Image (cartoon, rainbow, N blue to C red):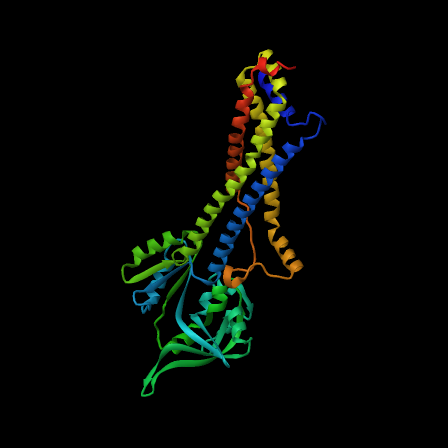
Length: 417
């Protein structure tokens, strides 16, 4: 390090200390660092919560929905075996299972609830990493052919007031036209299991039965609604779906989970971007505390600046000297904020649950926010983005006070000394 750079560094860092109590940060400098650290910490926490929410939402959606599906143009798939064979030949497809889906009405006593009825093949479903992994009571293997059994979401079961072993009546939009009017097809099922995906929409709106029982109830014969695909990489679903659609031709419809739930993730990304911009303004306000700090330092040190100027220091040297001081405050505040934000983010669920127990309330209603937990995931590129933006704001805030210090005239500053 050159001698000139060394004295600029030494004086710049020396001005961080109070002139009255050597060795301690001045009060105003400490306030600037604390304010900047809190702003950065809030930004890191919010970004981490949005990341965790997105990841958790994706994982819960994929636990009960398909990575991709192949259906017919009229919502049925007569030649589903052919589609299943072609799908298994696709690179990246690890498992395929036929399914039937239809809207249905469930009744238990005087209680009633609308739901999506899904018929699955338990043997084929075992190869899909989905619903089997979120079963709380019973297994999908209990859905034996001809057993007329049903697996319900925990929220749906609670609304109907039923538990495992109880009976529910399933009514589907298929039936017979009689002189008295349309009579829907109904069948009594026994509840054999419960699942909990953590997604209110599914836990409240999905009932699962054996695919053969569903076909008999809906009078579909050997026809399926479609086939579900399990992929090695769920994020590659759009590309795999496009390639499979080209291979199968125009008589099939190929969809993937990113299209079905596109609005969810688009809104999350939009919200994340908006929050980043808004909270960056808060960081900017905290960063501009540096302006007040350095202006006061410049005013207090005008005599020192004048002496340095008479000894040969130029305006550029003074500018760099106060730039070092502002950058040091920024680095300290950003580093402390990132550390605090990351620490809180990694323990956020524990902190929230503890606060809920202390206050005796629930902050997140699953029926509104889709989940009852507040997950957080700290991502390196988000932390880097926060650090870069905060440091740039700090350097910007340093420019004016450093410029004022560089413009101090030695003769005027020393006139009364």
